[in-house]
Length: 134
Image (cartoon, rainbow, N blue to C red):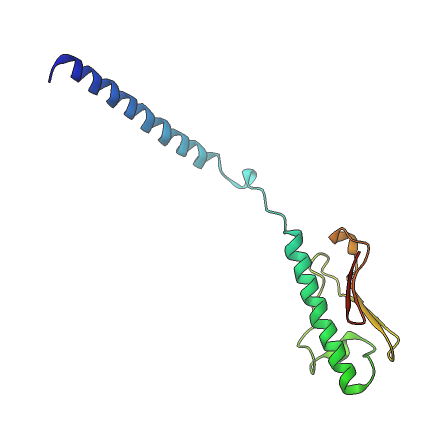
């Protein structure tokens, strides 16, 4: 090997060594920079929560309709659906509060979320088989 080839290999080796050290340094810096104070908890996805509410309201609506088919009247309270039509009554995932159920027993009912503003809506409910989101 001549002198110029040795110099080129030394320069390339030095560049490779510096690049490797920089990469290892960056990885070490990133690792030690981590920690709870730098961790941002992801917010619950609005769509995911809204989808859960729609699923809950649909389950409740079907149970209320099944109760009506059997008894020819709507239940006075959602608790009347347990255990024959539901194992348990779901709660609003955004607030943890029970869904609001209203009925005149014979003709109509509505099942709504306690605070529709949590979903950036004014109305979020099932009313006589119709899902309303406004």
